[in-house]
Length: 299
Image 1: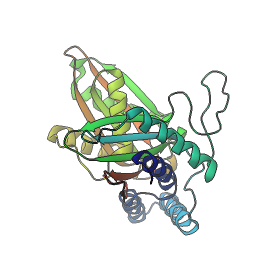
Image 2 (image 1 turned 120 degrees about the horizontal axis):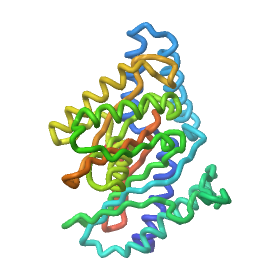
Image 3 (image 1 turned 30 degrees about the horizontal axis):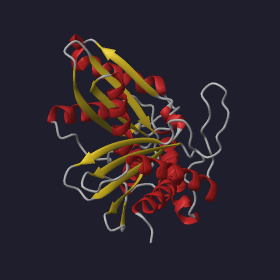
């Protein structure tokens, strides 16, 4: 009989493939909305780019294949029920094996190399890869696994700045907009912009990654002031005119998501992490009895 770790391994493999092949429903809806916006604006070039993006998604569906050749670096966000008594080392090892199996068995392009020698591992795992973020949920008897293959085109457009607190919200707005303009077409817009505010420098970067990669489009931060900043930034980014694939238009970003943490009195870290238009992610819940519920990645 399969153990819960066998189930986790199989689920990890399946999530990697699903994330690469099945664009989440909220992302699809945002892309269609962007196409309609460009069509109504009369910008034929931007409309055609958005149409081509939607055709890319439809073709991947029809052929049951990858949406993009960049299979990314695997990132997992795992919420573990505290009452399950899970061996974390075994869970992490099984997710590593899951990525290796997906790479060999599909097969997937492997991207993982040594940062100095550039020597290839060949299996999409390596030192520190996959990236696994763990949280423990009191009173829970399930494991919620979210997976995203983070491609390099958008990941390269990552930024961190330690703002002076006196710069306030104006400094935050200015920095985020500068990051978008500097990125231009490189992250394959329309993009999903993740912003991390507060904490320490590494916390801010982790928050930005969570915001860009794992939040559902259309969601709003529960803090009303943060939510207002999300909306302001989205409007201003779409007014830059960069547009789809940087060729001009009204749809530069599909969403702006902000996650935050309290910080030190004398600092204000701000991080930006960008996700390309694919918004690839997949998620599942592993129950205590070994059964699995796959979700559509829109949480």
